[in-house]
Amino acid sequence: MAFIPERFLTPQRLLLASVVVATITIALKTGAWYITDSVGLLSDAMESLVNLASAIFGLVMVTIALRPADDDHPYGHHKAEYFSSGFEGILIIAAAMGIIWAAGHRLMAPQPIEQVGWGLALSVISSALNGLMAWFLFRAAKVHRSIALEADARHLVTDVWTSVGVVIGISAVALTGWLWLDPVVAIGVALNILWEGAHLMWRSSQGLMDEAVEPEVLNQIQQTLGEFDHPTIRFDHVTTRRSGQRRFVDLHMHMPASWSLGRAAAVRTSVEQALMSAVPGLRATIQLLPTDVEAHFDDRRDLI
Image (cartoon, rainbow, N blue to C red; front, side, top):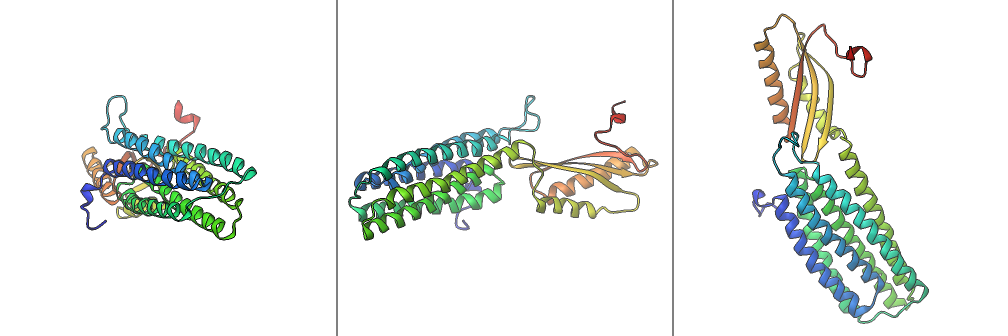
């Protein structure tokens, strides 16, 4: 990734590249299935169709997520990325069920595999393309803190392992003549991607439910607040959440009641700037309170 400028590897460009790679791998894997009539390679090709649909939907959602905040969405559109990973999870599960259905029929009526060499060669080439694309997506997902890129990368890695399993299964069929191995491998592949689809849906649901920031990010927030530790200043009620590429933290800052509003506001600004410098993409909201005043959440007395 060092040989490509980071500014060029935007989420949109990477997902567009993923669409192109998915199209190429569909052609390769479909050709492999056509010349071999292997249900294992058919399952591999079906997963690549899911890759294509997921990359297209992810591209749309990432584009929406980058829209600036407006009157209807004052916190931005960052959560659109969670719809991308959730949609990808649903497609993966649907593909897995389709693979199991096709493999079940083939298991009951095994068919010989033709031109194994060419089929395996095409499968290996497509796997190499997917592996390279996944590497770029994983690296960019960390830079951009994008769950859409991470979801697409994880799916491509699953696709690579799927292809590896299919290659091993078809090779075993060619060596042993046991035709039932082909559908059995396909079912194993389906169960593997079924788990991956469920995992992606779980990740997206947690994001939509305002999951707290990662432990390492929370630790960085606490360390930054510790830099302002002073007998006259105290922080509490630190609450965090994630929203796509953005992170949010809300907290209370207690200081002497005798301080002027200008002095208190200046200290708060320093804390906010330190937090947002320490954690990229963080939006900090700090409520000022006198030292002897406490705020009790979920207390009916606070509603009076």
